[in-house]
Length: 182
Image 1 (cartoon, rainbow, N blue to C red):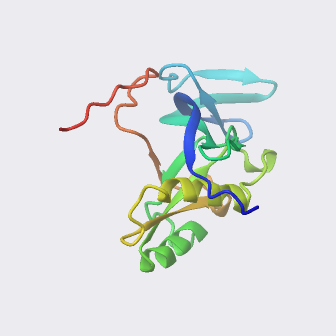
Image 2 (cartoon, helix red, strand yellow):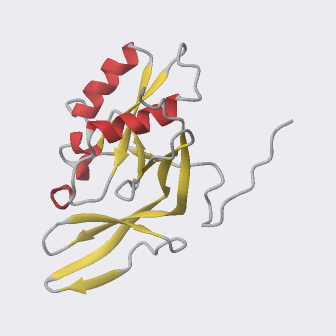
Image 3 (tube, rainbow, N blue to C red):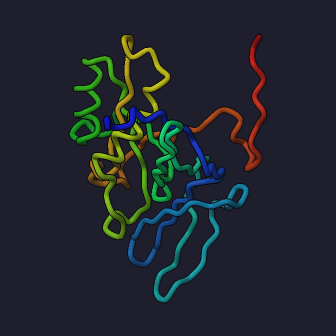
């Protein structure tokens, strides 16, 4: 029996924010996904010796992908969103790959997971390929493609100035009903 030619669809969609916190004691950086509307920047709280402050938040969604043909469900609860490389660090592995892919008419985006990275598993090549397939399955790939890279390639995220990619209309946690332009 031939393998399924997966037709991926979004499922289990959750709207929210990626929240970045920094500790003034240990200089640690961590992230989490919040379902609350606009976590307050500047909020501070203590955990043992650490003093964590909300430094930034960015709109994002969490989702899983399910194949419409065979029903296979691929969970992405460790995915917090996608970054667009802004070319801020010329020696960054993401930037070097971005340049390489650009020559092949492929646009790189970065699958972003939780920080600190040492407490999470990296995205496997198979899961990155599933995301890549999802983004390319409805595109005219003769013109260009999307390639999904892992945030593990970013050596020092505290120096990265990548932009979070967010959907138009994600100004609240309530999904927007989209009107067609015609």
